[in-house]
Image (cartoon, rainbow, N blue to C red; front, side):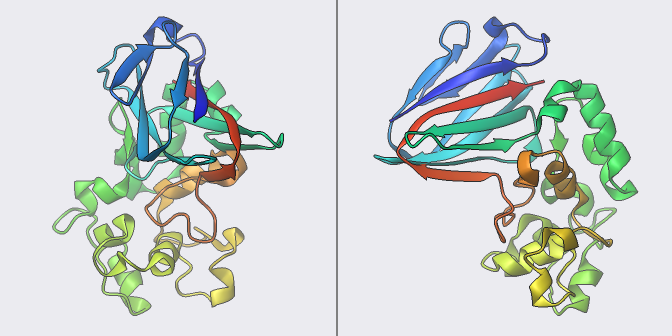
Length: 255
C-alpha cells in the first residue's frame, strides 16, 4: 500500500473544495480528503478534476502498485488536460519526481497554451485551439488518412523503409505496434541517423518532420522526461518512475 497526498497547485484559481480526485470508485475533494491509501493493484488510474467532479478540466496518472513496489507515470499520450507532477518518496530516503516542471506550474493556463502554439510548427498549432485540453496529434483528425496533414510523416517514414502512416507513427500502431525503437525514431526524426544517435536526446527533434507536440512536453518537464507518444519510454525518455519499498506519493495538480 502507498499513501497518496494530492496537492492544490492551481495558484489560487481553485480552492481545495474544488480540486477533486477519483480512484477505486471514490470521488472526493482534497478539502474533504487529501490523502488516499492506494492498495496493491494492477493498471490503476487516478483522475483529477477542477471545479466539479465531472468537470471538462481533468487529467490522470497511471500506476501499478505491488506489495512492495510502485510503478507509475504521468502521460501526455492522449492530451494535456491539467498540469500534473508526482514525487515518490521511498523508505531508503530517495525520491523520484516527474511531470510538468515548476516554471510551467507557475504560469497561467493561458500562457501554457500560448507558448505551445508559439513553439510548434503550423501543422500543430490547432492542437491548442480548444480551452479544455491540448490534444495529441495521434488522436487528431487532421493527421488521419484523408486529413489536411495526413502525409506529414509518411514521406519521411518511406525514406527509411517504413510503410506506416502519419497517424500510425504518432500512435505507434499498425506496423509499429510492436516496434518501440522504430516508432520512437520516426517521432523524434532520428530514424535516418546512425543507431548510436537513437538513444541521444540531443539528436531528437532537430529536423522536420517530427512530433513537435511531444517535444514541447519534454521541454517543459522535470528532467525533460515526458510521455508524448506511446513508445516515448524508448531510451528511457518517459515520465515513468519505479521503486521498491515506496513510502508515499505526492501528486501536484495545477491549472
